[in-house]
Image 1 (spheres, rainbow, N blue to C red):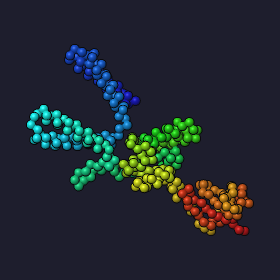
Image 2: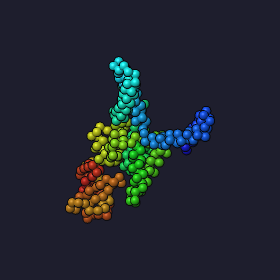
Image 3: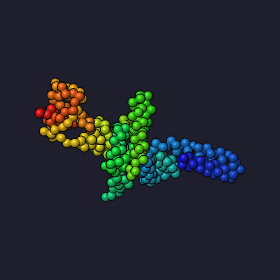
Image 4: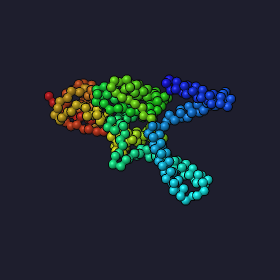
Amino acid sequence: MTMLFIRIFFAVGSIAVGYQTGQLVDAGIVGSITGGVVAGLIIILERGMRTVSTRGLSSVVFGLILGLIMSKLVSDALQLMIAEADVLLSTRLVVTLVLCYLGMALALRGREEFNIIIPYVRLKRHDQGEDIIILDTSAIIDGRIIDICKAKFISARLVVPRFVLKELQQIADSSDYVKRQRGRRGLDILHSLQKTANLSVTVHEESFPDIKEVDAKIVQLAKLLDAKILTLDFNLNKVAEIQGATVLNINELANALKPVVYPGEIMEVKLLKEGKEHDQAIGYLDDGTMIVVEDGRRLIGKTVKSVVTSVLQTQAGRMIFTKTERR
């Protein structure tokens, strides 16, 4: 609503200025129409610039300044070699145009590695030292991030990239019922995070149009912001670590918080189904940890006491092997 008010104010102001300018040549109506048309074109241009990031714009501006400086130096050198004023003027215009274009293009392409350096002093970003965590789609849909934040284990600023939000919207609009429910759950989770007290959640506009895969965009943004990635995606976890990005995996956190058991400890578990091996039975703890009980097939459906023999940690989670307690 605020942006709409600003646009209306700008359009009215442009029409008024156009009318006053047209009055100088007795063409106030024509001036008003011209002012309105110009204001409309500028508003259309402004709306088309919504995808332009502040970082990209600052890189373009610096590239333009660098191009102007280089063109001034080259033009001064040409002035010593070209005597004719008309030829010199045309040459300077061409040199300025070419160098400004090259400067903007190079600065925009290299914005991820772009640093302004003054001799012996490196200018730091204003958010240097601020912890930033980027949420990917899987971490949002999972929902456990809300409980982690409410428990105050995370105090960093949470960032949701615009392309992740777009992916969530696409999932929420899916024709598949399960995907649609997952997408809507993710949007509800984001809404709850934004309402959580003392928690900063922002949407980042950097889009990386040259990169197609969402995971690759997340890694690139993490490197750009010097941020951590919060995810449940195993492949994203590995790719990010290879590229030097820090990853926080919620599943790894959940596994680390599970109760520790030792061989010889006695556990009480309800046996629910048969195991893969002969005479095995399977049960589960409240946190979902699988319990494999040897010699327990005949006791399926009952709650039994068993003795821990070994613990196996896998990428999928933890498995505890036990045998029935002898009486």
